[in-house]
Image (cartoon, rainbow, N blue to C red; front, side):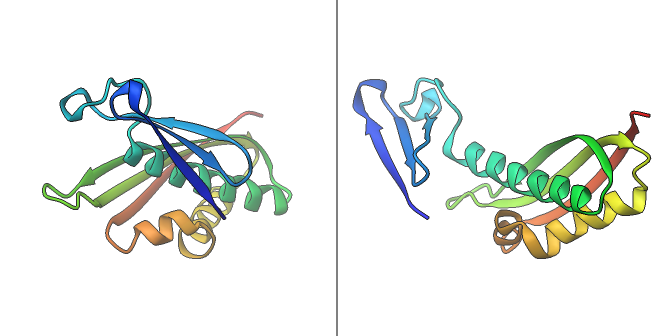
Amino acid sequence: MECTIHWTPGTGMGFVAETGSGHFLTMDGAPDGGGRNLAPRPMETVLAGTGGCTAYDVVLILKRGRHDVTGCQVKLTSERAATDPKVFTKIHMHFVVSGRGVPATAVERAIALSHERYCSASIMLGKTAEITTSFEFVDAG
C-alpha cells in the first residue's frame, strides 16, 4: 500500500493525498496552525478511516452470515492526549445497524470480530487508545 502527500502552499497548510489506488483526499489544518479549515484535519481522516474499516467489516460479516442487513452507521467519538504526540487515548464506536430480522447476537458478534480480528485500523489504534463499542439495531421489516 502506498500514499503520496502533496503540500499545496497556496492554501497555507492544505495537503492532498494521492492513494496507491489512484484516489485523492484533501486535508487542512486549523486556522490557529496556519490552515484555512478547508478540509478535514489529518487526525480526523485517521478516525474516519477507522470508522470506515470497521463498518466495512461489520457489513461484510453480516452479509456473509446471510443476514438481511440494509444499513450501517458508525459514530465515533474520541479523546486525545493533551500533549504531543496527541495520540488517541479513548475511542468509542456506536453502531446503528438496520435490516430485517437480524439477531442482536449476530450484530454483536460482527462488531467483536471486526474489533478483535479484522479491522487493522482499530486494532492499531487500540495500542494507544481504549476502544469501546455499543450498538443498536433498527428493524426495517
